[in-house]
Length: 439
Image 1 (cartoon, helix red, strand yellow):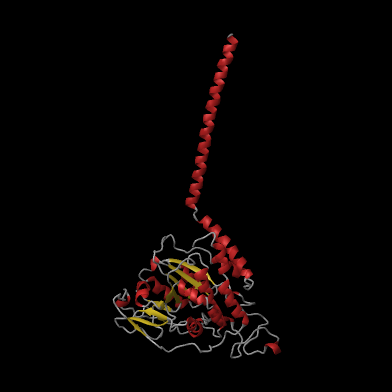
Image 2 (cartoon, helix red, strand yellow):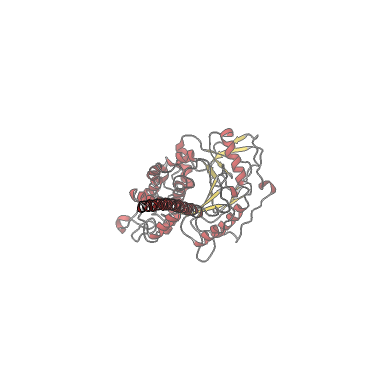
């Protein structure tokens, strides 16, 4: 009997030990789960860019895949690295973590005139409201001095993009110079060379055609390719490396954009400067509606879609200048006058005298008298556009119009096909993205 009682006591102790062990294991498991959750949380907070980087790498692969499908030129290693660089996020997000809700993105397109770029960047640094927006700098080629200037920008978010199919990136193949390319007025049949001449009998010059290629690639990339802007429906401002921007430019542009639907509903764009680059404005108490200029112009996605639908007209017009192409063939094809709205006093000035394609020479700088001096009056430092003003419309202005045949330089079938490919490169790609992104 005593033996039986002792066995029952031992069993009770064993049951108590089992219960205690189960409670201990429960505490350990809960603790371990808590530690794991804390680690995951800390990693998420400390390295928020990891998931974004994975998305960026995935997008790079998708873009390269679609590039092959639409028969873009085979990329060399340098071209691929530039395309990857274009997916990197903007800099200075630590200084300016949020963009203003109604911000107007600014796109500055450049080649290789560092002295000019320094002037433009300095002028932009003094623009009221510049810290509220994103500045995108689009490079036609890879030039270290230009890149360093942009890397020194601290006054706003800034993103650099590089044209990966620029002739400057392909030193020994199309879109650059190929060894069997026809030159100047060569007869392709007799010389057994490759190329189709323009309307004046001249064969392509890569450094000349790069002007039009860069502008068209940039437009397609900014509106339809970049994560930062492909979902942006508002206006985007476009400027060049030889445009001096006045301190009131951004605030004036915001006013013009807000007034355009009311004051000039038929206007396609807003401009910071007169169409005639030699003018500084009328000084009237009136808004101005005139033909669209190429200095400080801004338009929205609706207008971009109209332009994009005219890709064939743009790509087959025999002129290496993008702006003359637009004036002479694209705008006239819209069926009605293409007006832009601007103020009576300029907020931007074109100061360059050497062409965009000339760039920085080996022994001399592309700069006029070594410096650029712009007079900025007090009226240029604050918004000087009034909502109560009426609109003065300029009709039948002089300039390039439908019927002009072009200055040539754009006759090679390869350039025309590349141009058309740029118009297609993001559309299949973005269709595939629609299932995973709403941007």
